[in-house]
Image (cartoon, rainbow, N blue to C red; front, side):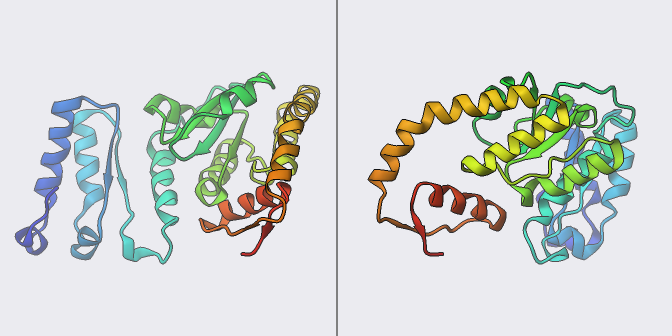
Length: 249
């Protein structure tokens, strides 16, 4: 909203409401999100009040996300704040269950999950970064929720289980053979597709066995180091060890 010194003294709500109106006039979106900043948190603007006013005017969800950086000491709370807004104002409150739909909470990237879960007769609801508003609305209708990084997915997964009865898959993150097998088996158990999962796991192990042997020979004696987010790191450490790489840290 291009806040200036004057707005920091007298408030920036007029600019916020005008920005929401501009977004509507230009794009006619199905929802509008407001991300708060440290500046708006410090001056105490009534962002919720402005959102409620514009939501009533435009007849679409206008969703404030309270993600001021000084509110916490960890960046991951930004995920939680975003997901809380989606749960509060986008997700359907009276879901019609879809027994073959699985929520996959993932960061932006290629969708590797659709071909995997299709082997179990499951459809993927890929969220949040690649989702439409309609995709987000059906989060409460899924048969299960899985994630690729539990720092990213744990808040939304737990809330969907608590509020809508969508089971959050309790298994290792799907990196490496042992963890991915466990992840698939637990998802199959929850969705009653155990036989399909075992057949798929057996086929995949057989398919990659020659290439795995090549990689282990190529990487013999190598050492590795993982530097990334904590939950993600543990998964990658397992992958390196399965390739025969000694992980130094």
